[in-house]
Image (cartoon, rainbow, N blue to C red; front, side, top):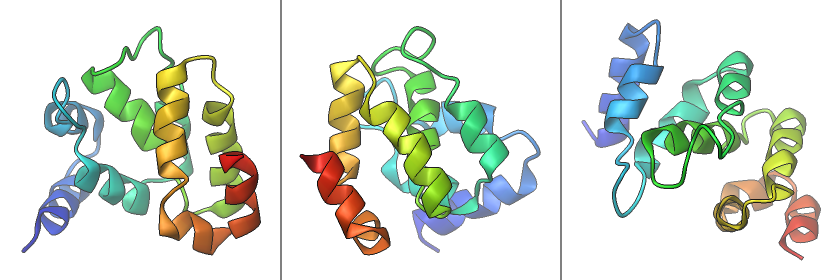
Length: 124
């Protein structure tokens, strides 16, 4: 069983994912837990992502576990129209670090496959 499968199994047993995600976020540290973020993107729902998007920079400072929740809110590609709308919110954020993270997300092949023209527009 790989890490993603382990995370997925744990999340399926929880009614409230937030404490687990905060604990396993990898933050503070050199990088957030990208494997866990991908599982959240695959397994989460609109309500969860919208909640995580309430974690603005004032309540989710850089390199904090709360920033990981905000990141999970923007790693949404499963529902393309909805996900793009939510990502655009963060692509236009005043915080340069958040914009940099979002620009890195635009390099993901799954986003290009979802809508290459949209990705190219936001990369520019």
